[in-house]
Image (tube, rainbow, N blue to C red; front, side, top):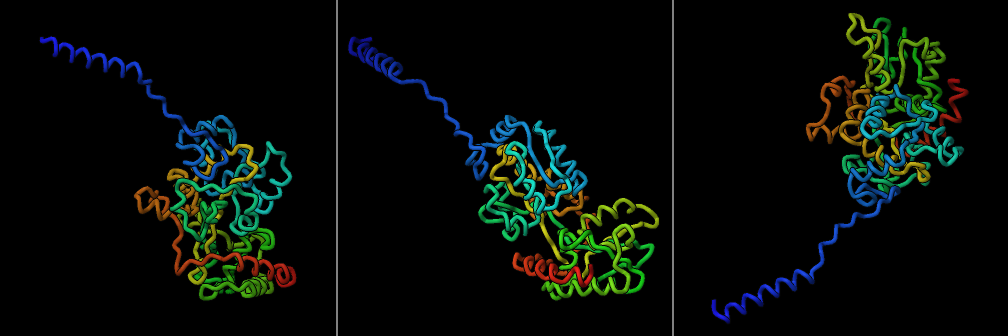
Amino acid sequence: MTTRAASAVCLMLLAAAVAACSSSPAEPKREQPIDPRATGLAEGFGTMDRLVEAARREGALNLVGVPRDWVNFGAVMDRFTGHYGIRINVAEPKASSHREIEIAKAARPQDAPDVFDLGLDVAAANAERFAPYRVAAWQDVPDGVKDLGGRWYGAYGGYMSIGYDPRKVKEPRTFADLLRPGYAVALAGDPLRTAAAFHGVMAASLRNGTPEAKRGVELFARLKKSGAFSKPSKANTLVDWDYVNAAKAAQTAGDDRPAWKVVVPKDAALASYYVQAINKKAPHPAAARLWEEFLFGDEAQNLLLKGFARPVRMEALEMKGALDRQAAARMPAVPGRPVMLTIPQYDAGRTYLKSTWATAVG
């Protein structure tokens, strides 16, 4: 090797050595700080794994007004705890939507509900109490059943239906059929206090897709006058959500003479959703957000379907081939075009019933 070539090689080696000494090791990528009260998964946690870690550190989840035997929620809760190891506490499982809000107002900070399960009208009236959060499946939730600010969003629902004992009465195709002899008709509670009963009256009031509470009150007043308005324990016909009547019908579906069947009236396909909302003052904010992500995931949505509720992401699940078709096939058929009450229609209906129900029906 010539002296010039050797010198060049030495210079190259020296330059490489200097570069190696002057460069520092690559710094590890920093993860974003966790914000358990963030408005979305990416903003608050970055990944689902980090959300799970934060929720596990909190260790518990407080729910309210969710019975285990309601649309298969027992299975949903068990699966959540099984996946994540987070204990679920349920306050007053049978509490109404209005009662859920009262419980939250009176609770000690550590006992307050993390998540609410509410009727849409109650959610809209109490939106200031809720923390905005958009689940990962936000785009699958129709705009008509969610607050665009993310404070509440529909999770599951159904249609007002007529359940009946086919051994005692013929299938009622419309609400007017209930006026015929032989029917002993009940509502699922007091329509001034119970959402299902209120929607039953409003479903009976529909004409060409438009509700008018007066018509519903008049129908039940006629049933009362004829002696056909009954208590649920003595009725052969029950006006209630299709997931309630369908679950009852499933108990005797394989019998030679089933004791219960369900039909959605052809002239009154009234739909409604129960919505989810996270408490602004949730004592377990990460667990609350993990619950919502789980509840709107494919697995939990199909579990609700097995409980005869119609999951809000039902259409999206079907399009991606993830829908439990066997469970879907058990749902009652829905004739006609579905109707959902607007907030003004809720308010008008409740105002009318408050002034007339007690005297007209009692």
